[in-house]
Image (cartoon, rainbow, N blue to C red; front, side, top):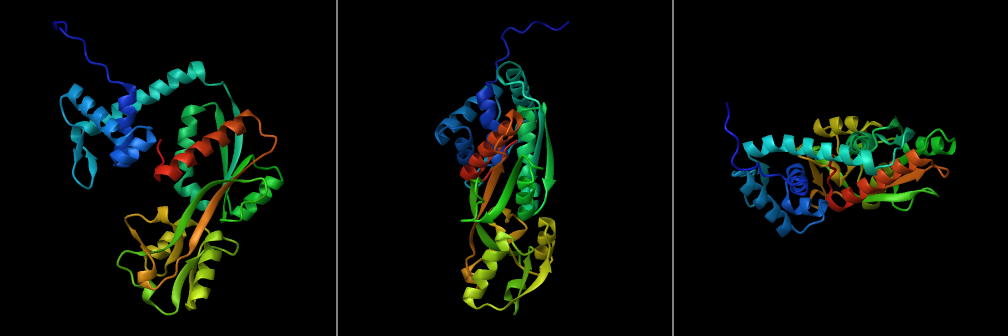
Length: 301
């Protein structure tokens, strides 16, 4: 028979676990501090306290990076489950009981890169609301809103081109994306991968090339982000992309590579004027998500 414990097991504070998960997700104490609305020094103190309670380190830190230890990886699973259970418990008492269906439109790039995290977060806070998603070009999504076949839509557009009645969610720099070690940007005429006519990314890049007098040819055309990435990674062409698209497998090309700056694009949102409670809840969630994304560049589940 096991002997009773002489001392109670210490309790892990949810606030500290929230900070721990933010650091694990972002790989940065500074970025995580912004997400949890604390100073970096306060975040460091929280993690120090957590490691003292557990009696072992949860992060490996050096001058350039932060990563989980083996014990930290184990803790991460528990922390996310505890935070999820807390959200579920609290929502039973303080969250409004809203149910219904929201018809949401989004362009391909948002649907691939951002929307999955947005929907996962929304499902946790509003499990009784179903979201039907339509992926299409921004012009078609605007038409669907006019026809009232959508409740909310996200739109990519030029900085000054948010439709009447829409609201600005995000403004982001566009860059020329190329393959790491690629040579496509050195060829003449310049091979460029483009979206179809009417795309905000296409119009800005074409204007920049024409103003600089750079000869180019459309080497690849696709309305889907996956197709654009395939063209870039195979070094068939370079393409204009938001700076947040450029990851480990792509590089941003600029003036040093003989390419002109493109400028920015905007992401807007339109909401049905007579929106009901489920639609308003979804719209508020999207606003909050993009506020955080604009400040940190991170989307958290």
